[in-house]
Length: 281
Figure 1 (spheres, rainbow, N blue to C red):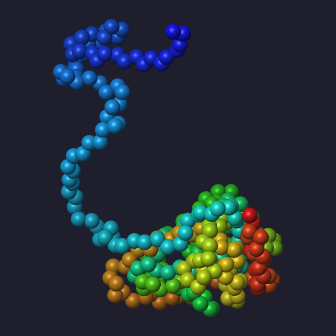
Figure 2 (cartoon, one colour):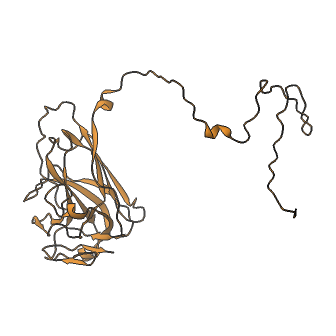
Figure 3 (cartoon, rainbow, N blue to C red):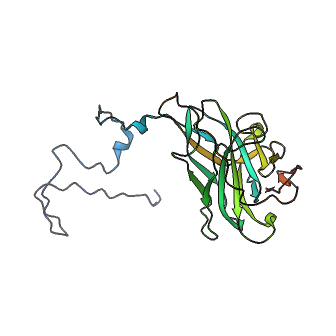
């Protein structure tokens, strides 16, 4: 027939124990048992083998026995939508305690685009007017050129204990220290898609809050999009623990200037009072 090129794989024979390699001159001091050859074709990839397995270890530490659950949402959206968060306002999302316990950690997914922001705040609030803080705000540093873009708040041993099913708000704000118009300061946030949950009366409800006078925007200002904010919830030692008393919040980092809301996302425009937040596709 016609000459053709065909693949050829060189399969060297297995050396026998006691032989000497022809090029290196190194003696072979071990070999395969009689009837065994190297699995050069990786036949073992097609064979599933099983064997019994067991292990023993000491009892888990008390903290490892506690139940854990997650609340909130990581980033996920069919289109990229971002929002600008300014001083003097907070973006809030309503959540519900999945068990009797307290928040351990919280992670806010942000972007590195910002102007004048020096730190990001996380405040836990009552879900109804006047949205009283349940604890003093936590802060995450936002260095001018070294902002991590993802802010992780360590809440361990701090904050209130909630009962299973209790609703609360997690509100994100920013602190700025430059002598320019506050509405020129901002931190850009990617928004995750929640759909109808963002406007419903339950977990996921999203709105903008001016903490200076407790005024809010309409629910679902970004048309089904919300904060990419995820938090870990850990049960308390004993379900019978009482709630910790709330404390007065720290002084506001920046006053509220003007009376304007501007929120836009996915061709949606809303109007309200106090502050300015813009979302862009």
